[in-house]
Image 1 (tube, rainbow, N blue to C red):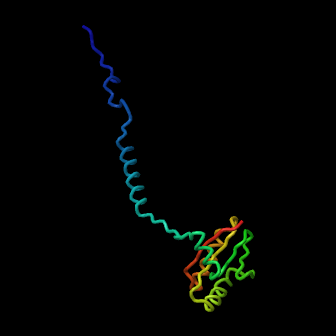
Image 2: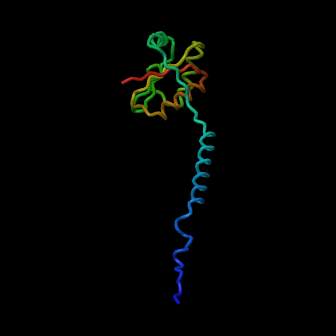
Image 3: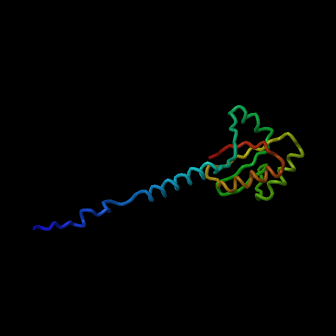
Length: 135
């Protein structure tokens, strides 16, 4: 009589890794990122770039503010601090209420300085702002 020996390894149920929990986790991550991406709003500043003809016509009647690469700010060819931009804009707006502002910034001017000047101009009551670059 021969006895048959059953090898317990042949009936082992662990032939692979169960991927179902990992797939559930990845699916939950995917859903989370899709939902959060929908609710993210990006805010920006809309800039209307004038044509060359509009720019040449508006330069005579606009308040010109120049920003150099060193961060110097010129209003009416005078060096002013960023905090003095608002007072100068209000003074020049009182002379001509329909005026706009032309900001001429150097290519290497810091964005923080430019945005500080834009904020001061808006606080001064002028919202018609045109941008130009120099250098």
